[in-house]
Length: 433
Length: 141
Image (cartoon, rainbow over all chains, first blue to last red; front, side, top):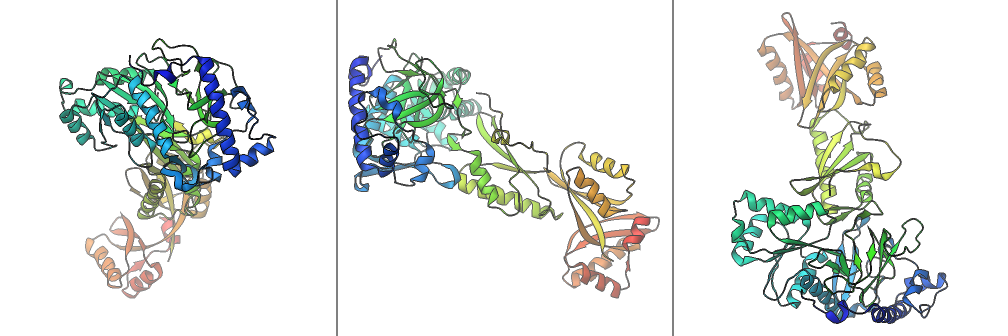
């Protein structure tokens, strides 16, 4: 099994710890002097630029949340002058404002490096054709895979998402060997291959690298059987760098976190205490080499646990389990992040309706579907079919243009929807992972 | 001459119409006319009832979205030409009909219409000596 950077990926823990501590100290110093928001937060907590003696001390530092990024929209947390930023990405955020991330030239090099590790650990090399069906654009998926693929010398096919017919044609004609996309899209492609009577023997696919949404072992088995490939789970989030934060090796026994760049902790999401090895909790990352947008103790909201100890592949990097869920109400629909509160705020802006709604998430033919049921308000109801249809269309247009995701809107009678104080009841997620 | 019609928003779900009629029946409300306009996912139930305000209250208490809509009604012999004549009177005045439904009793037809301008429609129909139906008469049928 090949390892892209054996020096770091197989480093003894003591040595790695030393490097992590040094890099953490540098990061904290840089952040303290370059990001006023962090400086204030640290001062409030009684911390200075030299308060970290050992990586262990990190638990004294305040957390960073999506809200902090929002409060500093768009560039407030950048730790370098804008002239040093060479790339901007963004992920869909709540209330219409995206979460913005910036990369320096060195950050792009780092990102390519961790993606090269990811692809290598999945078994890819310079002889492969990497079919990147992740979206290209503000989303980090497409370009992340792209740079990593080029770095290992593979032939990258930047197909981007959508247009399934063309995906299949290129896959067949170019002889794509590695497929990179969301796991649900992989299943969707698998069925399309069947429907179009494409002979699996004409395809050269041997591996898939899938991420950007949670998926189960059952889904993995299904993908592997239908596509006759090895399905590798990859993990990342744009705030930390994008894909490349962690990846399975070919043994598929946990995702190796690139700890020389991203320092992980597991916390109890309620008490915020750091949990010992093996306990399940919320994953928290501190970036320790990033220049553009370094983040201290960023709460990912993803639930998992960590396992230290050498993997049979030879890597010593800590492994995280497949993510088990989230500690907030964020939904991931076809790789797009969505909070119910986003929908609520769009409905609140419309005078014709009251924000009595229920969101139904399902997976039909391996694609996530989103249905919104909205109650018809008596004040607006005037017994004309055309008026109700116009209203339905307006809600749908407003949602789709803001969220960038297709959604089916249905008008329902009042009180059809369960009344509750908790937000969770607003969402009915019928997907079986 | 304006008639108060009861309009109810209904999802296309089994049992919803029954629930409306049950609720009204228990309170001894009489229904003179009923029509449903529907799309693939929802419908609007329109009814002429003996006591529109009371009916509205009954249905509101059962969480239906309900409204009172103003419509007009004429009585004609149940031959198509009379209906056509009424429509012609209205279209000549650029009065459009949002919807209409009709029923007949013996040799007579009762036509219910919601017009873009009900007052103007009443005036025009009267001028052409069409027989307009009063709400009080309707509820007695």
